[in-house]
Length: 315
Image (cartoon, rainbow, N blue to C red; front, side, top):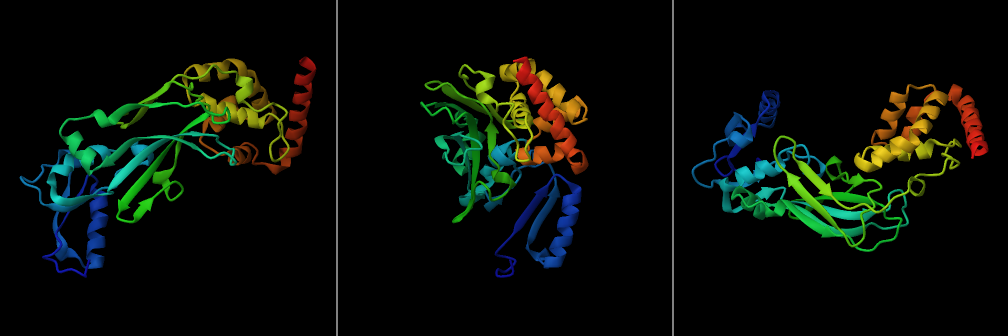
């Protein structure tokens, strides 16, 4: 900042939270940049009155989460873009949401790119400000694909400015969203729509292939890294429950007894086990949280093995 004279850089700062502005005031004093500040206001940006003519060279906002969900980044840029000079720039310059088919957990299979479903940029912000919302919805054709690609995956790529960008794995804004076991029907279309409002985010609609849980879930006999049966199946079933709809209903109908039996063995309330399985955790974290007491591990293993033998005899 001190590379410029205060008359060369004038800054307007807006935030809805008073405590944030209080902390900001302290930072401004520490950095000794008071002379650069044109205006500070505690206000809902979407209710902020725009200047009568474009006056900003840069408009910066990071009011977002991955996939532009829950936070009003889209609404803020579309509201503020009329205040940007013709030669001005929004930062981030663009936020791209891409759709993929993914073989989750199978590192030998590279994701299959489907399409860019939405890009928030200066161009789309202008369109939205003018009431043109066609960019917020559309459809993507589902190609033929190997059965291992049973998940839908959505990524967020952020072009911050010039060569500076953020991609999957760089920060929390780039965490992919997955719809596990989506299995969209080849030849059908994935329909999407970005809903604005109090709880912004994408809504998806697609045709699911005919499914058989036994082809989606690990066998009861498949052992965890610690040598325990059932847990991988229970964990995967919990992920399917998160999807809701027919898939979740089928899981509850066919796997409820297994959830109950495992909860009895690990000595946890069924509700606690269900909460663990439906949390967004990797399997190793799920197993660790399920069995934190090393003292009881051998006893639990013995009981699970006995349950496995019992089910084998019943069949």
